[in-house]
Length: 239
Image (tube, rainbow, N blue to C red; front, side):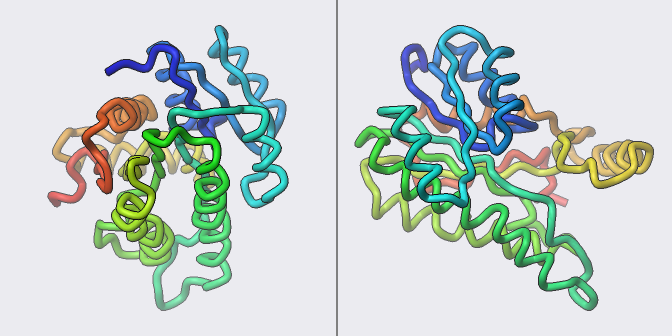
């Protein structure tokens, strides 16, 4: 099992986990196609990867935009969806449901729409991978909204794996990863938060985007894995 020559599209591939995944898969020989909302960032990632990499701007909430992206991308062996936002966090007593709805609109609908529209271009034995988050399965106070958002995607994975077979459908569920997702915090506060939380994990650190990229690569390569939520959380679920 290898990636050499396989065509893999990563929508949400211009930052954090998506960007790291694009780079890793390209270095393993895949022909990577990057999709992201900002054309400048897409071009930057394509230049960074080099080789046969391609990419175009796409709004995953737009059916027509996705159709155009997939037509240009052509036949795919794997599709990875790393789309999302950072809205929805807050104590249930006071959280604004509009923020949860905003987070849902930024992650669930775009991932599902991109998945549905990508099926016509995905090989019959291809791989479809959602990227969710550990909040779906970790009882963290203040993360109820995020659990709702990510849990909605994870709940669909086994059903889609059964329905769409022999396409393999899986999700990778990252824990706390040092990415721009946390940039809503001031830099100093972000540093303290990551250090404190990393120190409490069994592995003794927070994750890096490459940690999750390795997990995604493994899911794509292993043709005997489907309907699975792969936890990549540094052991947070054990606490």
